[in-house]
Length: 324
Ligand code: ADP
Ligand code: MG
Image 1 (cartoon, rainbow, N blue to C red):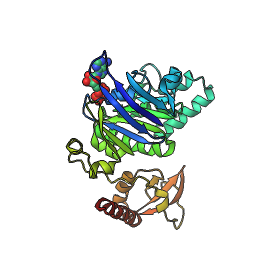
Image 2: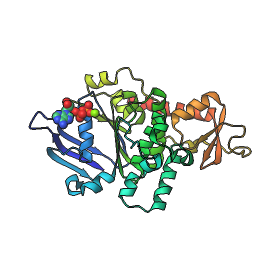
Image 3: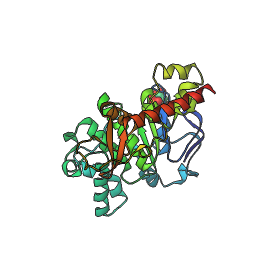
Image 4: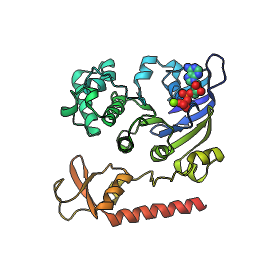
């Protein structure tokens, strides 16, 4: 848990950049900071791992003041992903991922295992990509490495500063899907800065909208879209259509048992049980039914009709809530 209590930041006695911030980010939450350029998002983020020192107030992680932590421990235990891809060009991909585990003096075997596990998690085969240099990967692949590098030493908190904003729209969407799927497995506390409302609504459990160093509103995507606190929030959300988003979407609950279990790749389109709602819908758009796998084993079949019924029920409940 991260708590900002009356936290302010100013440089050289100038006007505050962040003003008396009160904010609690819960453990395991995917938390978004969004706002126009210059509103104080990066400053707020960097105070968490003390890349910037706060001027006033108290910032606690798990109930302990950040100034009471050893600064190296603090930094190692907070994964950090930057907007510009920041891999070391002369090191291999595997070496890049291993940086923090090396600093933490993990043994070699454990590091190798961890690197392989993480690369597989984002669909980059370690035997193919591990020994390559960053420049031999596409921008999207490099940023995927940036994300798993931040996860490498299993930090409890990950902070990300516009991590996908330099990517083309397709890589960007793919990485957004990846991070959502990843979050289902890793359940970290993620603080994610963006200036893209569509991205915020898609990824965030909760979103804080910042303006001139202050938080204008904090809420779930639905709260912001359906109950904006003021005109600034409304105009910031603008014409963005809320994504169809179901917080506790669990594919497994929708599965039927297949009549016969076919091996993966035979006959039917296959999806992972951790797939996002969006990706599942995309695939069902083209296929009447798909098989669902976990760890390489088919665990059931999902029918388009089942999915439609589920989504319609969710929407009906939501409309009910909004009218209350
Ligand atoms: P955002 O990430 O929302 O674009 P920042 O947190 O980077 O905003 O910056 C907020 C404001 O603080 C900006 O007006 C910026 O110019 C100012 N600022 C950032 N860093 C410094 C610094 N080291 N010294 C003085 N002003 C700064
Ligand atoms: Mg910034």
